[in-house]
Image 1 (tube, rainbow, N blue to C red):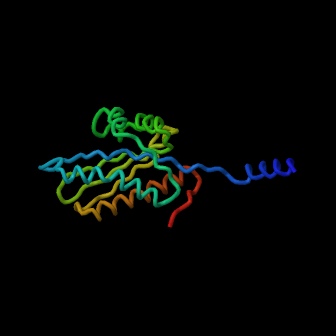
Image 2: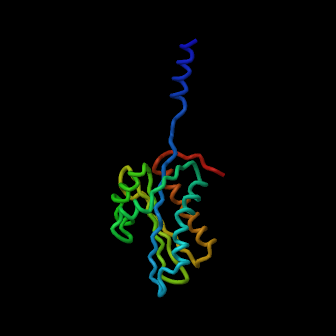
Image 3: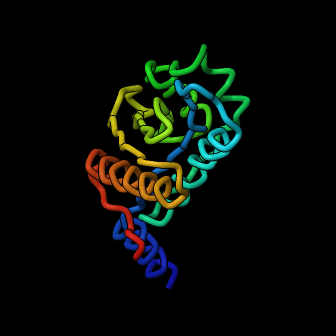
Length: 173
């Protein structure tokens, strides 16, 4: 009877592939506000909301594990605004410290009161290289506009992760 149990255990171990959910870390979005009244409290609040909104949108799209990186760790790794967006190897090291497979570095760039841009880089932590560069325009400051832009980015990011990882996550409805 022990032999049958052992055979069954070996069979089960090799018959079900063990694919861990991709581990994704999303950094706090940086605000680059070039308007005549830069860094208004409302704009700082909206920019601060983008990280949790993106994490939620990614989680709804599939079986992903969201990894947290503290603001202190992010601040310690950067040498200024745009630094982590421009230096994928440094960003990847930050992701590796947290056990992430993928790191999302985002920037909210506002040059007008009428529109702004969300730009994100998807960094492959293992290869320390840029895996995707995505941007979308936000026309206005309405929360629905922000959510729509975040949802679009989440779809693009997860599609790219699935394309590069060669495995499909369990897509949630």
